[in-house]
Amino acid sequence: MIGVLAAVSAAMAVAAGAFGAHGAAGPQEAEWLRTGGMYQLVHAVAALAIMGFARGPAITLLIGGAIFSITLYAMALGAPKWFGAITPIGGTLLIVGWLWAAWLYWRA
Image (tube, rainbow, N blue to C red; front, side, top):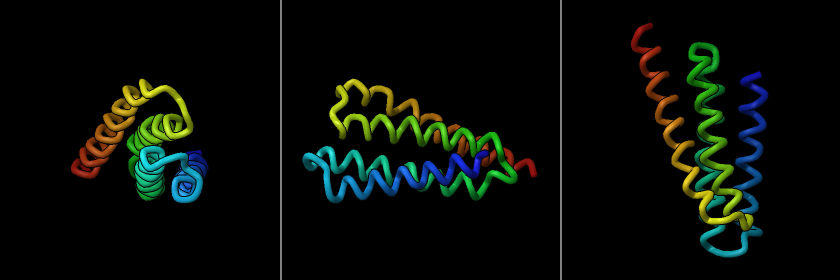
């Protein structure tokens, strides 16, 4: 299931990046889409790369990437700017996922 979620996450990231390049309402919206897409894509690929050894961290990266990116996508599509206050929760989960993976690799 991690692989399915990671692949869907990567597809969302590509779609967000494409929309940011070709259909965003303005430069701020395009930047939110670009940033969200880049973070989501990188962490989807990372989750695929580590899912066999570090399942928990892979899931954490996917959840963190989704929260981080989807809040940016929502603002780019007109959601209230207070959604930006949720974005750091996703970023924190990304950091936790990487540190958890590092700890598991260190122990191995």
